[in-house]
Amino acid sequence: MLLVADVGNTNTKIGVFDGQRLVASWRLTSRREQTADEYGLFIETMLRSRGVRAADIDGVSISNVVPPVQQTLEWMCEKYFSRPPFFVEPGVNTRLPLAVDAPREVGADRYVDAFAAAAKYGPPLIVIDFGTATTFNCVNRRGEFIGGAIAPGLSTAGEALVSRAARLFRVELVRPKDAIGRNTVTNIQSGMIYGWAGLVDGIVERMRREMEAMERDLVTLRTRTDELTRTVDRLRNDPAYIEKLAREDLGYVREGETVLKFPKSDGR
Image 1 (cartoon, rainbow, N blue to C red):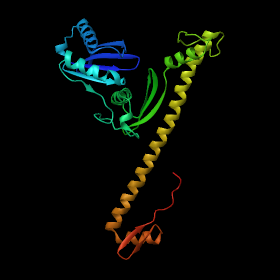
Image 2 (cartoon, rainbow, N blue to C red; image 1 turned 60 degrees about the vertical axis):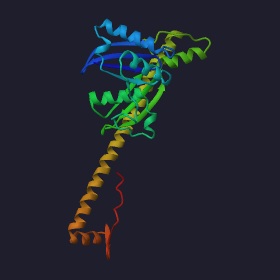
Image 3 (cartoon, helix red, strand yellow; image 1 turned 90 degrees about the horizontal axis):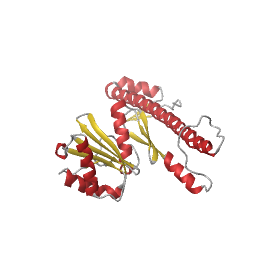
C-alpha cells in the first residue's frame, strides 16, 4: 500500500492507496511545531482505525509546501514506516514538463494538482485550488505545465479584512441571496463570495484566451515548418524547382550556394 500526504499551510491531507484504489483519507490541521513522534503515532492510530498496519505500507509519497516540517516528516517515515519518503520536487524528480522560467520554484502542490488533472481529464486544462492561496495552474495541449496565477485564498483575504478594519467582523462564508447586501454581514458575504467568483471567472477567461492564442500560434508555426521542410526537400532533389523559386523572387541561386528569401507574412 502507498501512504500519501499533501502538507499545506493550513491543512494536511493523508491518504492510503491500494493500487489505484483510495482506501482511506483524513484531513488534519497543519502544525509546524509537531514532532516526528507526534506525526508517526497520529498516523499509525488513523491507519489502525481502518484496519491498516504500518507494516502494510510499502511506500510513502509526500507533497510539502511547508519547508520547516520537511526534516520532521522524513524522520517520521524512517522511524515508523522503515523507509525514506518520496518528496515531490518539481524540476528535480517529476515527469510533467515544466515550461516556465524557473521550474524549481513551482510549488509541489501546484505540480501535483496539474499532473493529476492532466492524467485524469487530459490536457489542455486549468486547475484551480482554493486553499491558503487560490492557485490557477495551466497545462497546454502538449501536456506541459506553462504557469498560472496565485491569488490570496478566500479565508486568507477574509482574515486580513477583519484584522485591518476595526468595525468589521468574521462572518460565515456562504452565498448571500443578493449581490446587494442589506447589512454588514451580507455586505461582507457578497464581497467575499461574489467577489471571488468574479476573480475566478475573470482570470480563467483571460487564461483561456491566452492558451487558445498559443495553440493558434503553434499550429501556424507547425504549418510553416512543414512548408519549409517540403521546400528544402525539393531544393535538394529538384533542380528545376530552384529555377522556379528564383523566377518567383522567393529565393535566388548563387554559384556554390542557395539562399532562400521567405515571402512576407500574411499577418497570421
